[in-house]
Image (cartoon, rainbow, N blue to C red):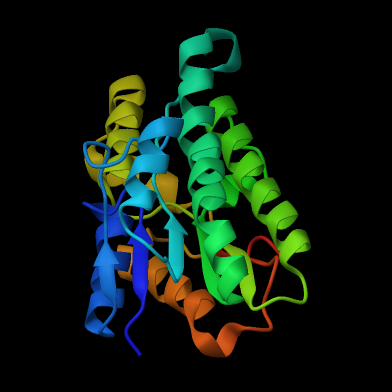
Length: 230
């Protein structure tokens, strides 16, 4: 049966890979970028979801990152990451939840990060926002326990995306390393020893969204090769 799927931040990177997997399965997919739905704007989110009708699967994927030592992290950087990565997930989840509850069916999957489990240097805003996103998921799952709706999160290590490319460029700028060495430094942060591909994350998301995953609720699936036990 074809489902209505929304993948926020779905125009590139992980979001585009997720959207492609759902489309290949025959689902009707809406993959809004910021121009289509600013997830930090309460009114914009309400208008967007009101225009869609019933949503069967929500993937909270929209996200941003910035890197700086804590002492040099601006309030604007801190707030912007919290707004997109955590408040955006809150607003979108809140928008779809009543309809899912009324139909007693639905899947909410949040794309978080290994940074939602541990702290990385120079990522105070990003790490805090991803911890918040997972905390939101767990609170939502607690409210949904025993219903036909579930909430879970996928937590990948570094993925080969534009966001990671920007991190590689920052390492190059600050250390003088070439691109290969800078990428290797990121890959070394997990036992996997390489960057994840977007489709690997997409596979994990579709697993949580499957009808057969009805008994899985409030869980995090860490994709890092075995470093974090969750």
